[in-house]
Image (cartoon, rainbow over all chains, first blue to last red):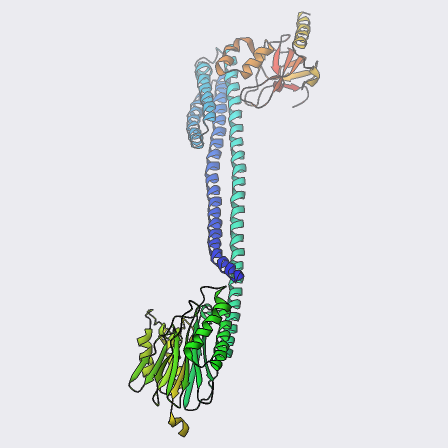
Length: 457
Length: 129
């Protein structure tokens, strides 16, 4: 029982785990994708800065070479080339600043400021004076030119290294991040697969187990339910239908047993539990009632003795267990029946003028030590005693409406007078009410009293 | 003769100031070299003091600029001989390396016979590219 409970709990938890695993896997896959996109954007910006830097250095060298060319040739072509390179250098500087700003590389921006300041100084202190007076070239101008070139060369090398480092670090960090998220994603998907497989197995095992239980219970019910035995002056019909769900099967029992030449015991009971345990309990009920009835064929005493035995045997360990039961001792020849009902209200007599419900004469069994009243009811020829379990009165239609006692009595009144057909029709009606679905087990025992007509038959 | 004397003094002075051995240097003492800067600016600054050489490389823009009167701009290809070395003396500001300060005497060109200090990166062994 405990194993089954834990199995049920596991089957409730597994879907949550399944959804969680899928969510984690998808989230991790999304994060990995987002990381790749972000890295691609950032690397594009760094590459843009690297390209701009190389352009900057190239235009700087172009400027210097133009000045050298002008000094050597005095050709104005070099002056134009110098101005052109200076303009292009400004454009590259702007592009590089934008890329550095986007990357938040403020330290490199500071170096770029130094670079630009040095180049501007070179223009004003070296290039412009040299172009203005190419013949007045001095050692001082040479020194300054060398100084500015040194500065710019050092700065550009430093910036180049910083950008490469940033690119490498970004790629390394991103790779680590992608590896992590990919791992989480793979673990998530693997967990999803494992849990799915586990769920499928658990469900299949549960279905097999329930199927076995249902087969066992139905077999027990079939064995324990009495075959209709011939009684003089009577016609007997019975039917049993198991609930559609394996969880709702078990616990109904009826019996018809000949106590003497004149008397017969009729009994129907409904155990509060379901399943194999309840089905086994029906055997206890059936044979205990028979043995008591053989000694004391008085329904109230039968129920009282059974109540004591039942309390000792079952309710000590399981206080919530109880049984509703109807017991009748029938004398068809004398056309009367003594009966007692322990909380079992699905007992009726169909007479020529309508259907009468038989009264409950005591509480359900297993709850308290109470006397059970025995009543006697007169029967006319053709009267039919109809005993049912709560599967009849608690049958529901597709809208969930209960049939109740009055609905059951209406059904009984409209059904065939022949007991076996009546029992079969009642089961069929309940089944059709629920859309071919039986919410609960249903047992029917119908006994038609023929009186002296039975002898003639 | 005066140049030789000055060179000997330079070697003695450098050796006394540093504990490093010239054996750790990238160039050998008395090795004949040619001066050559970077490809984009092949001229070379030769400094009158190795400390100014180091300060020029490590200092700020303004500091470096203020030191220019203590340097000569030497045309590329000028030959020289290594007469002193202080290993790993120079730590350029923006660059991730250290370099040796080398004392040299120039052997030709307008500064023939003068001595000064350069980084080993600005020298090429004779016969090497």
